[in-house]
Length: 185
Ligand SMILES: [Zn+2]
Image 1 (cartoon, rainbow, N blue to C red):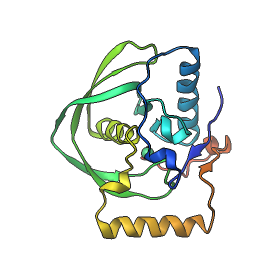
Image 2: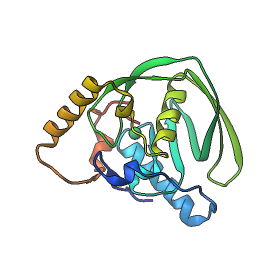
Image 3: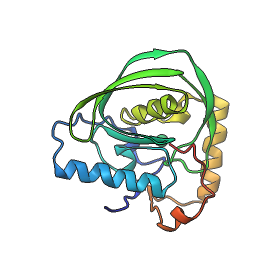
């Protein structure tokens, strides 16, 4: 397995539509395994293919031990609502409250291409909705009102301090550090 670079806000790939996965061969499964490794190294609880520069419609999540590979996911039911703070591995250190459905039922395929259905609530539901958005070029900051969005982007630019790179390397070192928040998706 290997760590993948994470694309950050400003990278065009984060705004692109993904392509349905039609073949789950060894190459695809290596991508999935690398995505898990990268997500854990970056202390995230979810990671979608566009975040590592890929166009396959796949995301990985691990919320409190609920570990899922979601291939070609589709939300077939949503219920209720929840408001909570979100972050994103592609927009490090920026957090904001986002309203999401409290419960979602998702139809997808797993790492082996087998059909699965996930009935998720609370944080897992939030995480899955965030990752599925990534698969359609959408980011959590898109949900913010004009002023909050502007403030978030300003903070992002400020902490970037002129850095124009479109990827960040996840250092193995980050595994040993615990300053990263658990809510980064
Ligand atoms: Zn994200």
